Structure formats: structure tokens, C-alpha cells
Length: 117
Image (cartoon, rainbow, N blue to C red):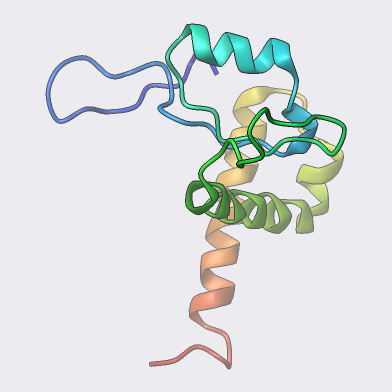
């Protein structure tokens, strides 16, 4: 997370996200307070053992649904056995294999029988 650089229309790139989305496994007071200290909006649903004070959900459901795109990308990458097992030990080689996997995925989608012209 410390290496993330989000481009801005003007000025230096941001290093903190506006509102990261997490699953219920990330719903801990320690995480929520850290995000609050850094003025980052929390998009994490409450666990069943946590009860909000007024009964309203504490996260933006529309932003949380966008998380599905990231989950699908991770699922596509895990289809490549080489990445799931992490055969590549060097970070440079691992990132190269991720790029190859994305190229393969784009070719598979773009040139499949189901592709619409």
C-alpha cells in the first residue's frame, strides 16, 4: 500500500486511497480507527457480531459492489497455475508473469467464439 501512487490532474500523486473496500474479515476497530485517523472513508460491512449504534449500514453499498471487479481479476489470475503457486520467486519475474496472464486473458476474450464483432 505504501508504494501506491494515484495520479492527480494536477499536483503530486496521492499515496492514500479515498475509500478502500474490504470484506467483513477486515472489520476490526483497529483498522477502522486507523482509516478514520487518516481521513479515509471506510467501505467495510459490519460483521454479524458487531452491531452499529443506530442500525444503519456504515458503508456505501455502491462502492462496495465495485469491489467485484477486483475479485474477478484475482480469480482470473489464479486460473494461471504458475501464479497461484508462485513458481516465480523474483518480483520482476512474477510481475512479468502477471502481465503475460493478462495478455492471455485479453486474447482469450477477444478471439473466442463468443466474442461479438
